[in-house]
Length: 89
Image 1 (cartoon, helix red, strand yellow):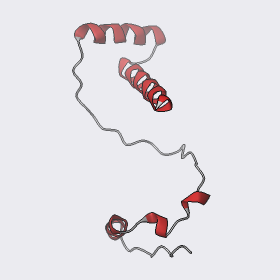
Image 2: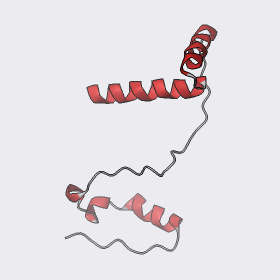
Image 3: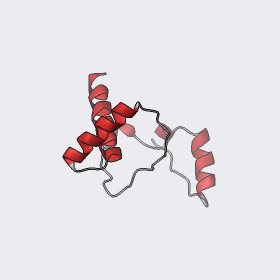
């Protein structure tokens, strides 16, 4: 039988609790269902990436042909490749 999850007064209190407890003591993960939270916006993080100028020029050319900003095209390419690699492994 699963234990009841306690009520927490603050996020810090809850965070401290989950840092020292296993969720499988409280949740039957075999009954869990995958859902899509389409309204959530992903947390973004700025990174610095060094690329050859020729690669940036080619990326900008492709982006122009697709009528999208080149940074957005780069994110699309990365997303597609990551998904592809995850399926293989």
